[in-house]
Length: 90
Image 1 (cartoon, one colour):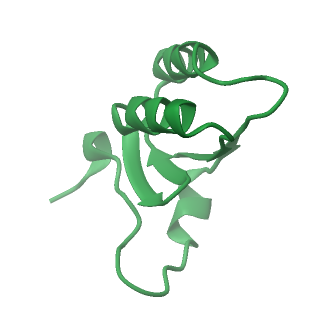
Image 2: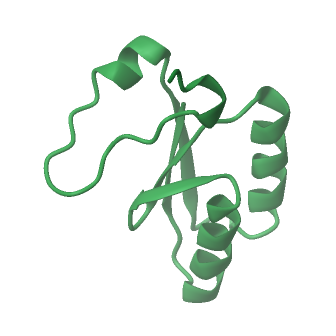
């Protein structure tokens, strides 16, 4: 899992970054998305976001979690940790 956090100063850029992230993951807080990405998808996401962010003002951070770390996530309040749809066992 990749947790993507962002701080975008301009509302128009903020909207575009959030919309783009919504194509790749699930919004879990106002500026945090949980994404299950292959390397190529991550590179594509970074390429798309680079079009919208101002490198002097905006920040985007990517936190990579292994499956063990994902199992350790605790959620207080509504919602749950997103699951990778490619690895759900029934």
